Image 1 (spheres, helix red, strand yellow):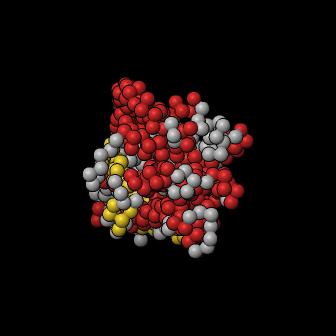
Image 2: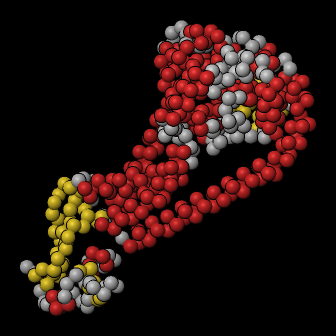
Image 3: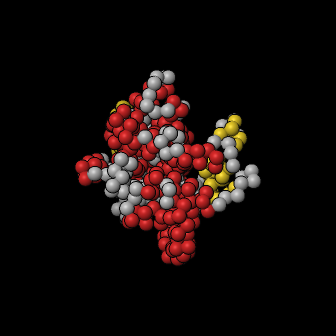
Length: 459
């Protein structure tokens, strides 16, 4: 038991050190981004802004923005380009126009969000036409990968770009996938977007099932392929057929407005939400903070595990007497449960474990295991399990000078001084025929824990 307590202590210290180091380097990186890279970004924006404005002058979404809105859009497009690597494939040479228009599709989608860079994706690969995807097993027009790459067919991108009312826009479609993947697997997702995504999916699941069943819907049939495609196709409809979308599926449309914090129908006020919509959105946020899907949830669980879960686990393990295998089996079961929950959420299109291994070991595992051990102590299934051992050898004075550490026959509980500590006179200890009777109880999870002990005469 002492070995396990020592191991847990080392793990707690390692966890605290890891957290401090992570926080330190995150702060250093933030400083580099804000103070050093910020200089380059400003210079880059100043040089690129005129070209951005020139290429975007015919972009419908940009055209309806106010002067202030256009400044914000231009600034974001420049920053997006600065933070991505654009690569041409199959002989394609990527021009500034391509970079600006691709970046514009991402900025349009995230215009109402605080975080717009979709930082999980660092590389955008542009093909001249449709291309073969090994993952899809055939020709595709675009793809987003978990390796942080966005792949786009320029021909198909421009087809969607040139007709703003055909309900097809490859740029918005792929950026919608990227935004959702950023939420599921990245570390820079907009917190409010994270909160409303679950609510939007719950609202749209009925329409999604309708499409999957082959029934007619306002949403393109391709949206029924899976929940991820449903989201991306809805984004295309949201921006290209806003008015019709709002008429046909008003609840789903309004939830998209709350999700993206913008309303494409409001062309006179930079697509902002109305005062009533803003009040409604803030009310929802204030009533239910993002407990289940935002980055705050895993971080909170990790901190709870480090500063409450592990200490509680140490305490309960000090009074629980079980073979290491018993505890190991239960720990594996709890981790497996965590993986099952994670898998179920991902199938639903919701993610909350971006740093899953760290989250599981330092957060989920100690919290759940300590709760189980607490329940094991308080819910008794077997009241008395008595063990009696003959006193043997030379007994020693405990560190507190008030108790004695006794030695038991056959070296029983040799590594557990607390269990062998007794408050009695020395004369009682040296009497021949005396034993130490230890009483355990068994809890609901089948683990025994210490209840009481006394010096008694051996039978």
